[in-house]
Image (cartoon, rainbow, N blue to C red; front, side):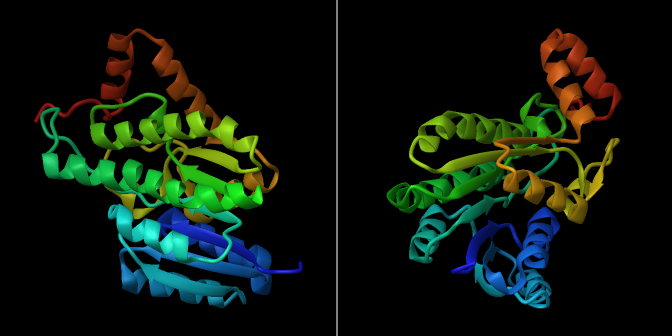
Length: 256
């Protein structure tokens, strides 16, 4: 390799983001330059050290993705980014079918607007050199929302629509857009859900799957397959049926 592969990962301090950073560091070692972004500085430094142990070159940036000007400024200041994985995300529960406005705003600003701000900052340089990959981490929740976490589902559905909307146009300019729709991954975020978590994967296993599929050029990466198909099927059923099924599984609107 003539130069280091430069990969940017947001939400890299824990969970799937940290696992993706470790996975890429394990694959590429000293041939890799990682730019890791997250709000939590201490966990971010821990993630950085794990990647350094594999020989990767790492820079960490304690930046809040929900602050668009900060993340845009950071991304525009970085050297050529080959792959950008926009992963940072938060969630929250509803109460009697409602969420505090502060929670809704924070989720949308982080999961959707923050991801769009990152993409906005990445596109011009990638267009100019006609190369680069943008990986947007959505969720199988994008296929069919559920009452337990309305704003989270809305943010992930919005991100899916955004990726679907820009993919073809950017592909003609040499820029690849990958959309990832994972199911349950064993992380702090998943631990917040008390309902059933079918087919849950460990973070390192999910990261390995994503890395392999990106390397193979797969544009839409949705897993596990059975859960993905189930979510899409729910969206085809009459709304009342889908709502009843989700409520039975513990993902309907809480009654109290």
